[in-house]
Image (tube, rainbow, N blue to C red; front, top):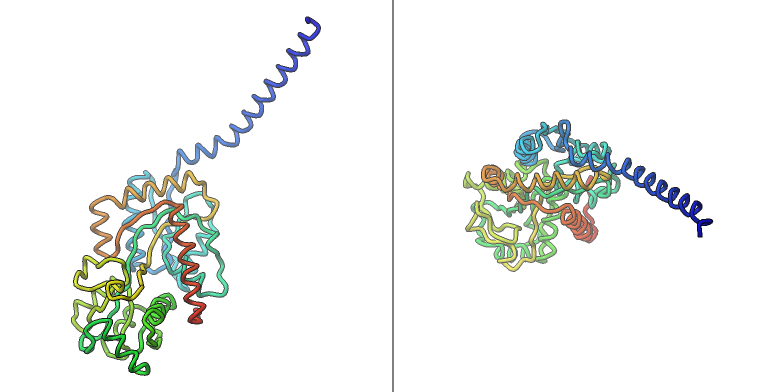
Length: 333
């Protein structure tokens, strides 16, 4: 028996040291990752907005950034990089270092509709790590205050009888998609008339250059206060608190339940622990009473979700809108 003592001891010794060395090596690799997530952030964070200052997406980003600065203990700065349907800002973040310090206040436009409408983009959905929704808002159908149609049903009836006399204004291809979805669901043929922005699209309704528009809630509510337009329906699943007397499309028998959104995304490859940390803080921020009040004041509903839910939602929306764009042959210029 003693003859086996030393070889056995040496074998155990070697095996033990091998395991220790292996564990030490793994620890050296894992420790910085865990430490980075635990210590995050250690310097300022930048939230890129792909639109000009003053717009709803910009204001929303600044509301969230202000509170994240307090919660995270580091400055959270909003940087505007507008241009080409928010492609400039989105592309910048897609190519940024995936460390959690450069984020995008994305929206339906650059993340969903651009991938449906543009043949080529400098980024793909896979270039982003979704963090959380921040807010959603439906569209409002506006028509001139003197339009004899008192409901969407009456407007649809007139449109079917007079297809050459009805049209709509749209400030971008994404709004055009919603209007063409309405055409498809109602069997109408409202003709598309392009305009440069939401304000111009609404003005066209006021001057009766177009029959109607489907437009974002903020500008719509402002226009309604002037009395020159009236709201026929909203595209959300429920009525808006700001427009309690305006029915939803689904109430009227039109199968449309659509909302645009804004949300935070990071470059793909950002450590999941950092993504989770930011998501948790965003969720806390959106529950603050003063934040809810400020966001709802923009006619936006504050809402958060998990990275997994956000990612799934984006994929589903891209697939659904691609089908509409293909059927109607809608492309961005």
